[in-house]
Image (tube, rainbow, N blue to C red; front, side, top):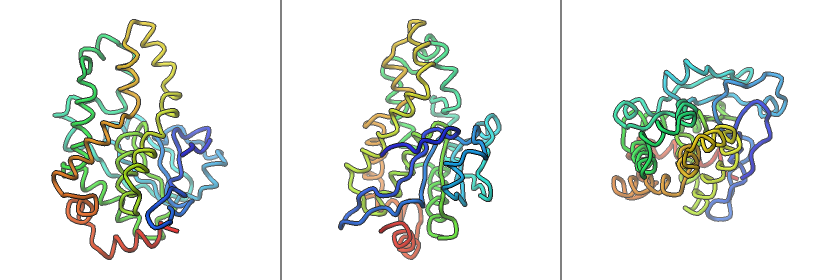
Length: 263
């Protein structure tokens, strides 16, 4: 799924046209994902043309304070802090601290070296499924999507890859995408993320840092998504039951989401 070539919003994508069961597709122009909007220029015509009505911000309070969003004209913001219940105990810095880690190879190695980076991200993805704040946040997203007046809707975190990636997986699974489509869409952000962080990765490597560690920090890996899907299977048995029971989305809301977002 190619990125929308906006100059002031990183990793901007339309989930529209992705294939679903029964020959259906995601309706284009209604559901977008991205990185944070702190550099959005109101004069960016590509973003303005999307007509965004609602922005769902998955970032922590600290991230929002450090990099306040500049939202598209006429849109409203819905705050949904996915990591509120997990961050303090996780040992995994939020995306807002990626630059600090990539500027200090010794700190990165101490914090996330020796395979710890993958374990840390996998634990975080499991927390996306299990913690109260994450469930509330993703329930908020789905509730918004059930209201046609809330779309076009854009959801984002900081880099637009982890909290945002799992949100996209939830919505696509609910609409009827198979696991291969979930995985392909999830991994499609890697080129854009690696391009955005390329100068930091080059500097990290030049200082003696492990390039594989850098890529594991800034990108996404199949194992991260697999950890969340496994947590869903263990706790709920299926994505359908996770949405209905874990996130508490009633059947009528599910029906409205499907009716509105599929073609």
